[in-house]
Image (cartoon, rainbow, N blue to C red; front, side):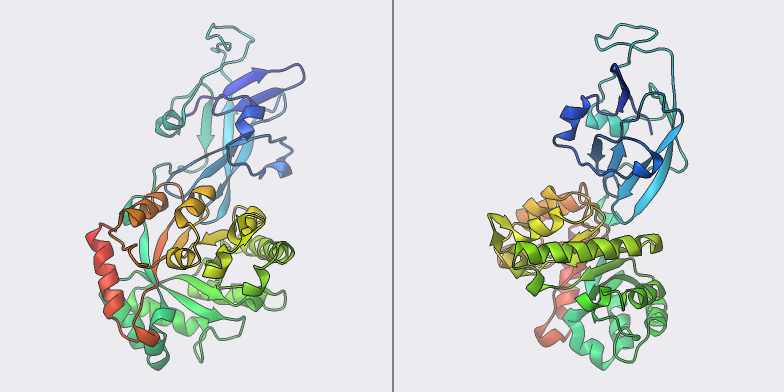
Length: 387
């Protein structure tokens, strides 16, 4: 990865910026999350750009004389720390483009040039691992299925249901209704279900939780069961009583933030799933907006496109407002919004560019959660679209 870095000399400090904008101006319109405070860096701004694993937020300001390295935070499927080594170079130019031994170098670097740039750069950057920068192509996003929509079949014969979904071509399944109990589903433990998944070639692409699964008394068991399943996406299925007022939403946000911090070392992400009631307006904003404005960037926004539309929400606007926060998304057709529609074309475009999406999860099934005709037809449509 290459980048041109902007050193702007000030009387008391040196600022290092990627995009070339002054720090005060760069703060406006750029994603910002200070993940570097533990290293003693005074981070003042961050630049977010899309790549195959979601946006990267780059802290880009360090005090004068900061010698070697700092971290950048990646929040899409997880939060990680990357080491970046900065090596100075004597060949610099000032803000007017003239070379000077002591003045700062100002290399205006556009978003496109930053992503496309290769190894050469004005100030060398050495990463301890390769940083994927390209957007997620359609085929890079796996397709899973929410088991609730075949709950009748699953309750009668879980092994055969998983085999059928695997034969249809789904790559993963999402479980539902977990409340922090020792078993994950009825008599099935996490180990039992993992064996069934492995036998059918399916992955666990998520679990829908009751809110009590994230309570302090149940949280560790929830983590252990999801580790057993090989699952990294823990989404609260619904919390209607917590989405009706600003104060209640603040309580829910605090719980999600706390749980996310505890799940982080286990490489698991905590999130919240959309229902129609989440798009009621409070003081001119969707309850959904209020919630995700108060949660950490690592808290997942599991958009449910059909549910959002049913609540008169705007899925596209929400995906744009909160980039990089949708590692899994529920897709279902709604009225005239078929998978082939221009509407879904834009949804898919966002998922494959800026939303950090790794799983499309189909939530379409037959009456009372029986039968596989609808799941089969839905997957055929997605494959026809190149998904």
